[in-house]
Image (tube, rainbow, N blue to C red; front, side, top):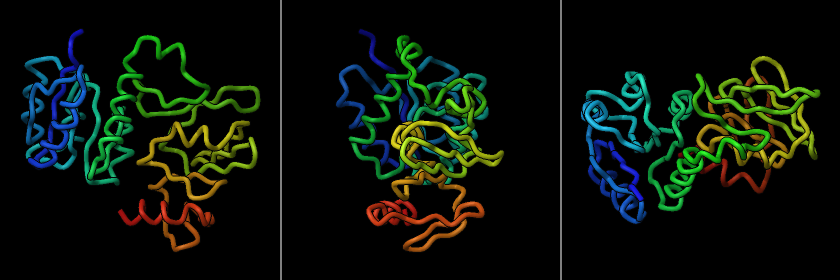
Length: 239
């Protein structure tokens, strides 16, 4: 079987070494090039095909975001970065995953598994009712609401509120009501852009206006932080 050809791009040598070590543990993957700036990556992509790009965002000469925006055809890409605030930009470019440094091997494997599931031909036939899709202008989910299937763009979501099997998706355009479990959405929504703060609430991180130990202001609404979620919320927002 042909090995998956990978490029690692990062201006930090230690980060490159860690990612190279991770890739080396996978039998059917190989690192064909390492780069320290976006221009190097651009030149390599023009010269030879690759299967998967692990890409830092903040690099000299050309950032990871600038690089992808300059390409007519974006290769399967996993961002590796220390900056959470670019998560939605990454998903609008249809990156496969968004890994926040320091990256654990377990989290790396989850991203690789996502890459493999998206590139398998059979993947198309087993999409669940709501799924983050690639190959579109901006990522979205499909949800069933009022006997219709409604497309909801991730960038428009403010928060989700769940009560038993009824979910209210609050967006900038209004709300969508669907009969599903909140944990179904928690599994599908990208961790770097959405955060569960309560058994009844998942919020879009970039919509947060303010927060304290017990509540979060998101949009014009104040939502409670569940006691069992306080540590996770604190760790994510203080990262």
